[in-house]
Length: 357
Image (cartoon, rainbow, N blue to C red; front, top):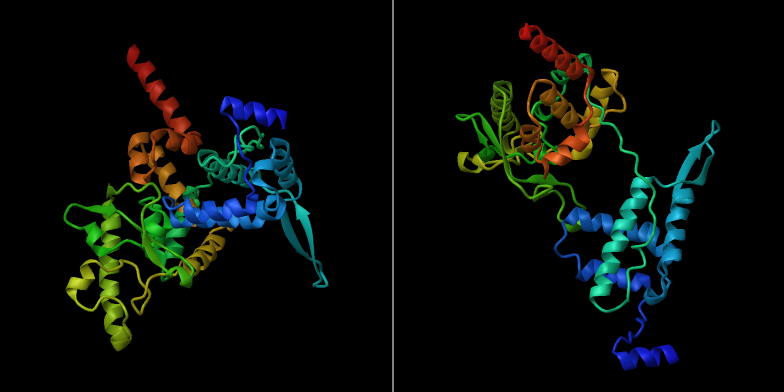
């Protein structure tokens, strides 16, 4: 009481909030995240409901301390996720396992943002997460396809109905959502360029289902692509026209040339957009057939980046093609030098030395 009286006298008295952590997070997610993208808010809510609410939701916001936050992070690192196991007899058991350092760091980021907003709103004096120590995230090395796998991949794509999408991604570096969301008005056959301005995003039906959404960094980019890619798109245009004729009244895509101009490049035989889940299954079958069962669709993007660097593209060009916010980020992801690049570097140096004579 004496301390509070002094604070009142000095004009620094702070009335503790009666809100719980759960009540504040609900308010923050619904009222203060309007500037965030749909998937970002979805991730925030998932992390909150899965981890933060069960552990800290009942704690008074003004009473939450840095040691409590630190203990929460430490516990996540020990028993933060549930692992389901099945024995030979088919019996299912569950056990707790460590949550990855990256996920713990993501949770820390969400809590820090939320508590920073609470401070600005005058609900707490300080951010209880700012003094916590988070585990160090070990950067995973990207896993591009090898040259032999690329050759086998190209052959396997020829026998798959989604092969053209996969070929497009591996030779342009598009994200999956950018590829399935590509529309014909963004393809310029005369200049050999593609404009990447949006992505097709999968959402629950209650949130609108598949929806066009902004790019990851909101920056439209124009790619000058290899003639092979343009030929690929010409073939897709012809194939799509054939599928429309074959589908007849069952065709649900573009209905006339005007609609076709802004229609999706890649569709199912009935004209509907490509389903990301089905695309994933097709890719996994191809990946297993070429001896890369752990490969993901996103690894095709990594493959494009590594091929670009190996073939002499500068980092700034690769950054622009991939749509990274900065060249520094591109360097951070692809800064490792492949064996072929090291050999090429040594050969260039040898050539220089020989020319000195």
